[in-house]
Structure formats: structure tokens, C-alpha cells
Image (cartoon, rainbow, N blue to C red; front, top):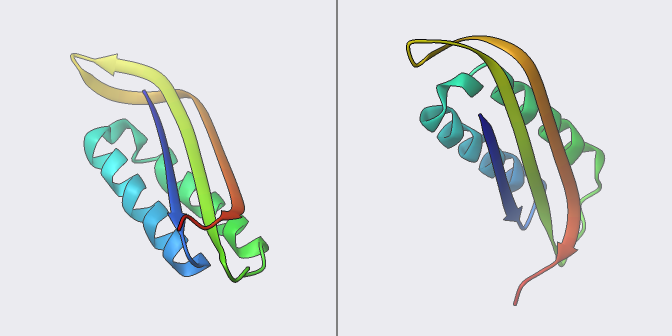
Length: 95
């Protein structure tokens, strides 16, 4: 199972909040991400913290991740592999 989303925000704290909200939606739809999702959020928050605040630009956070594993009668029972990627960058503000 995989997920992919992009959020944009005018500042770092709002970007963190949006990342957390989007991941919570993913976990609600795909419970197999209950283990890896919070780890990806923590990584994205850490990357956001590294960047200085830039006035007049939006912070774009792009996240993609996937897990594969074992299923039993439609229930995800074990993660066998995990992949996650977060890209955080300041971008021009939409007018």
C-alpha cells in the first residue's frame, strides 16, 4: 500500500500541522500505515525545522511512502518492507 500527498503553507508551523492532518487521513484510510506514518511525519517535521523561515514564500512538503507485508484474510499483519520520502522546499506564493 502506498500514499502520496503535497501540502503548502505560509509558515513552518502550519506546514507541520497540515502534514500531520494529511497523514492522519491516510492512516484512517489505510491502517497498514499506522506504524510507518508517524515516522514519516517526524522526519518531515525535522526537515521543516532545518529550513529558515522565508517571508513571501510558501513551504511545500511532498510526501510519498509505501509498505509491503503479509496479509491474513484481508487484514495487514506484518510489514516486510518500508519506503518513505519527504521533500521540503520554499516555493513561490500563489497569488
